[in-house]
Image 1 (cartoon, rainbow, N blue to C red):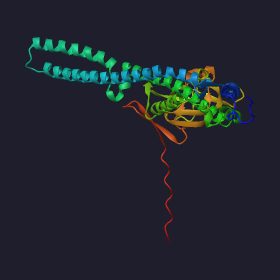
Image 2: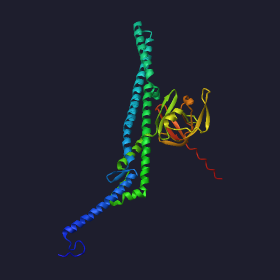
Image 3: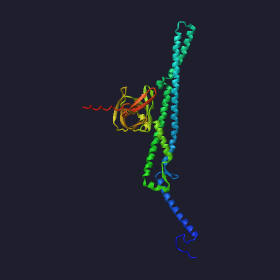
Image 4: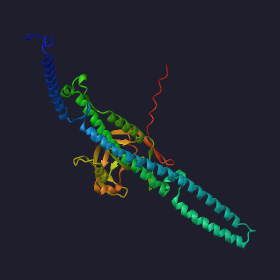
Length: 369
């Protein structure tokens, strides 16, 4: 039998046709595999990891593992808030008991002053008055008028604990949101990289660049948490007659400052700056500060990139960095340096409200002549 040349399906033996087809498929598969390997290597070189057909940055996986720590911090802050609310109610109830005891003493004293009361009755009334006065003395040390609830030691401590837990959560949240923003920027950069786009191939390659859906959902959850946490009003407390307000320096360090409503300079203690990781240029301009005791210390003028109070972020904030020997002057938030805003304290509710100053009225139009 003589074979004729021509297309494989014309007269070629079936086995030969099948063998040739398999060879073609194998060659195509090998070429595809090699191309895939080269593409995968190129994507991996940019720091991407393969998750099925999705390619994500290694830092994304690290970030998803990192944010797991936020949940315990959030629960701790919520627990501290609930404890503070419980202390408020407990103080209010015990203050009611205190007021009732005071009224009872007044009534017993009125009865004991009666002219028709026997000596025995007066003695019993006197004993009851003394017992009530002892209870009153004890309660007066422990409870406060609900309109000044922070004068109660237990209420003030619960409030401080809540503010501290909020600060811990704020620092962790801001750090994680900052990393999320960096990752999003990195993905946007990769989307513009011709080499990455070529390695991903066309739609038929079914490869996709991150972020993953999990990352997007978690980032949105952090945004929602930030909206709730960085809101108005702010919880504040008073100690030795001075109100204390928690702020965030440089979007990374939550610290409590003494609030001076009429202050014209923000002061930051050396220990606070060190703990916040804020360096002071030794060549920054000097400023002499005189304390109330007549002592003079030399500070440095600095500019903070930003200062957050609740949901308001002030940028390029001028402040004075105190030297270590000025530690006793404390860190002060100046009410007159809030860039068109004012911070109002509500002593009854232990809250601070940051609001824009009212705009000056526009001049009246000149009357028609």
